[in-house]
Image 1 (cartoon, one colour):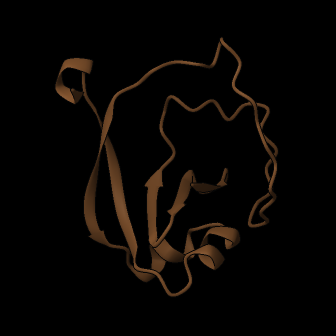
Image 2 (cartoon, one colour; image 1 turned 45 degrees about the vertical axis):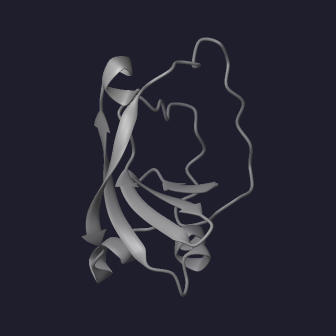
Amino acid sequence: LDVYMNLKSNVITVVSGDTCQIKKLPSSVDINGAEDEGDNSTNGEDSISQARDQKEYSLTIDLGQSDQSEIESMPVGGRTACEGKAVKKTEEQSVSKEQFE
């Protein structure tokens, strides 16, 4: 699983195998202190502290194929990783633990 993020556009690209998804950055993600690489991608790692470790339950909803303007909003690294793959627009819907199970 690779995640590419452009802090300026508030859009993330999630790449997993043959799947590419464009989605909004979840509101629960704290980007304070994150380096803004703009369109540049790095293989940086970020650790999760206990203060940031929280369990959330969500469902990914497929909204269909992304249009060209959405693909252009992706970080360069995400566009490169998704070349030749279908790029889907998705959104996350928060659910309770009971609904998720």
